Image 1 (cartoon, rainbow, N blue to C red):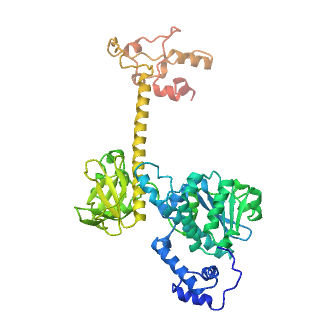
Image 2: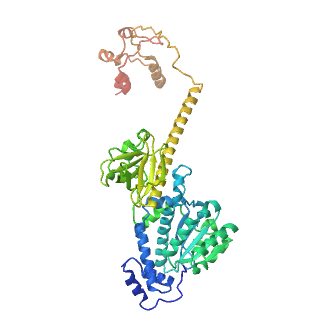
Length: 525
């Protein structure tokens, strides 16, 4: 996988290769040239390699990969591989960073052990998931390489905290990934820079590359012992901050959002709709999947929490297997008679009481791989078969993940209930004053009827006027009987008014008092 072809293509070789492949618009001229270089300008070998590549991508549906795929997003969030956006080396080659400490490989054939509950598969990466993500990111890097007329792609491998048991005992996965890169992407490697490796990991990585990579690729492997040596290959603005540069890496979520904008696609919201929340609350979980009894295939596919789906065979009687369409939902595996089913024909609960194992059925359909699901109350369990070993591994992994998610929800509900109970006990034990036990006081108020209206205190106003005018004034002539009647004064108070000065109290109407109109004012006017 050398990044440069030392010889130019012979005249007519590219045209002959395009005619031999007979796939118009699938491969660019640069890719045809790289494949010819890999096969030493042998047109027939190059055409055979390109045809096999097309069949490989079509078989695994790699032709339609985009950022909207849930499996790609889940693998990106694990953080073991990054495509450094807008970062290049000194020759404008794009950069892919692999951090092996976040990579936890688990080969497909060993998922049978996981399905028995002996391991946690949620954080492990299967061969299919890793290969799909590598193809997706390498396609992006190759496209950027061709747009910039660069010579190849730079791969940075960070071997920090690389575990011998965790990583290199699964050499079959690494071998498969290296063979995929070698056959699918010839002549794209500019440099392979290996960081933070000790003597053991250095020897193992060197052994893998020497046995799986091409001879010219081995010459492009560099073991970097000091981060400063990276500056010989990559500019400081494109080196991540962790390795002594200035490039600030994005989080997986930020990169996913950015890539969605570049691809012009809309990511589905992770928030569940109200209709879906009703099928996944605590009360619905106790129904063991029966909450989906009236849901069609279309309704299930539209819901965000729907997991893997596809055809499965189910044993109906001793020797009769019927093909059904299966959909995995939280807490249940739904089996429909067809892809247009209006309601599930069979509902298999998926919870902590469910056991999944890989099995082999002698009377099963030819070329199928069995799955046995044991649930309480069903003698012999449910016998299903997938169409390939790869599909069976995916089903087992997703079923186990659904069981773990159900256990997590139950544990969370239990913790919330225990927390609420403790808070209530603490509150009850608190020495607070309670008004519930206090005796009710008797009302000793004696009702004496309505009290009579008290006369208005006119004397203070007389004193106020005296202080303002400097002398006593007699306002006896300022009022009339009609004006007096408008006052809210009892008859007894009006008959013999008196004041502290011994003289009669001048009675003025309320309106006159407010407006300041008195007999003296009228006389002065």
